[in-house]
Amino acid sequence: MSILSADIQSQLAGQGIELPSWAFGNSGTRFRVWTTEGTPRDPFEKIADAAEVNRVTGLAPSVALHIPWDKVDDFGALRRHAEDLGVALGTINSNTFQDEDYKFGALTHEDDRIRRKAVDHHLECIDVMDATGSRDLKIWLAEGSNYPGQTDMRARQDRLNDSLRTIYERLTGDQRLVLEYKFFEPSFYHTDVPDWGTSYAQVATLGDRAMVCLDTGHHAPGTNIEFIVMQLLRLGKLGSFDFNSRFYADDDLIVGAADPFQLFRILVEVIRGGGLNNPDVAFMLDQCHNIEAKIPGQIRSVLNVQEMTARALLIDQPALQAAQSANDVLGAQAVFMDAFYTDVRPALAEWRASRGLPDDPMAAYAASGYQQKIEAERVGGTQAGWGA
Image (cartoon, rainbow, N blue to C red; front, side):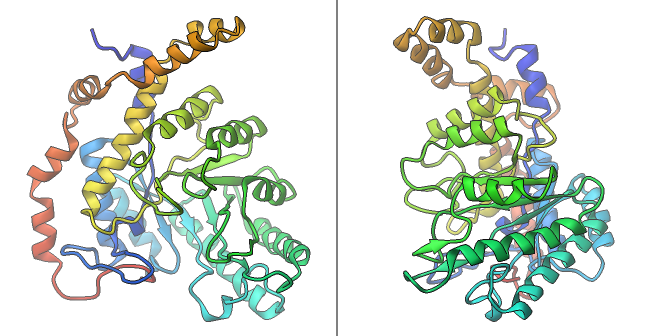
């Protein structure tokens, strides 16, 4: 008998993890963007690669776009292309960090003209959402200051709120605004949205369709991220995750690579708070594959999330609650760790095979010939990467 009960299998079957289009383009460090053979040259090829991840895992039903990196003449055609490959177009991510005008801010800028330009970019993103059928507009702002006294921090918060309100009012139907936070970089004295509290304070003034995005790499060392997950779920404001991993700062490495136990703890709180398979809480990757192959990197990432979800679902909740109620510290921790240490990989392989999926998605991709095919076909043109 499988260690995965019918209920656990049902919950795993409902899990979907959105892939970022930029994960399939070239990326690198502050010093160089690295090129690889077979890298997509346009959004259509990025989506084809994302669809390959979904084909072998059954875990990646949608693809997030980044504007203007993924601009095309006909977003309706891009949507049909995705649907033909068995995936949907998901979150639309704005970009106000690569234009010369935004050196000192975008949605927070003192200059009305520049701030209006940044707002208009987001309104354009919502136009894209209308064409792609996307629900979420995700906003991350590379804004702040480097030196004490450089700027009026409070005034920037007021201007940010005014800008976000204008953007929010353009949303229609079930469309949502999701505000991401990051505690430092590229501004090093202060950032305008440095933590979940600031993001929450901003979106709480806008309305029910304004939410917080939690990027697992955007926290100071030692931060209890699962506590933040709990709190945002408790407040009904956790709109989405950006799953990745980091060793020192915002490295955007494969999720679970640095601290798989942290990923487990986060998913325990997701499940406890009703966030698993909740349509209001979007699971998404936000990673760049610099030295590893891109498609296998995404495959490994979604499998890591699936494996830790399965372990979190294995917690003996009655035993845990009994130990907690009795203040049995070691007993509660033993129940918790028993689930974490359970090797779910054989059971997941068996379950995938029962659903007509490869029992070993990594091996299935390696044997498919897809990598060799795209390396042979994608010759010439300009490879996609940061900024394209």
